[in-house]
Amino acid sequence: MNQNIFKASSKIIEISQLGDERGYLSVVEENLSIPFEIKRVFYIYNTKKTVRRGFHAHYKTRQALIAVSGSCKVYLDDTKRKTDVTLDSPSKILILEPNDWHEMHDFSTNCVLLVLASHLYDPEDYIRDYKKFVEVYDS
Ligand code: T46
Image (cartoon, rainbow, N blue to C red; front, side, top):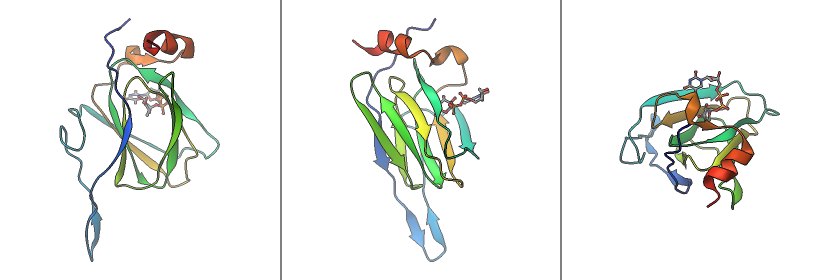
């Protein structure tokens, strides 16, 4: 089991909406607005409003979550602080650190949640057991 953990605080950042009469354009760049190298991109869509997903933390994967369409909420728990953040704009990015247990919920029907990740997919990087999560991060 990978115990090489990365601990930091998740945060919301705002990026510029570059706009003119044609509409808006927002830019994300690795190691600039996104504080890591982007190794993987995936997106979550067609999630029903009543569904909660996630229910895990990571050992090392850092992620950036952007609701590029619609909105959703993300429940965050670092073993001490628990909070809900709302992603409701393509210019709002949640920098989600591995030590935050997270649950995504309240998806609008048109929500497309874009996720940029610092590592390739590895099921061993997931902590899906809450007790194990507390053991690893409650120090
Ligand atoms: C996270 C939140 C924000 C892959 O095969 N490759 C991938 O890169 C990913 C991300 C998933 N999968 C497979 C694994 C499952 O069979 O896709 C299926 C759904 O994944 P999961 O149940 O992990 O999805 P979520 O929404 O619970 O979590 C996802 C990410 O997995 C996770 O890293 O932090 O979004």
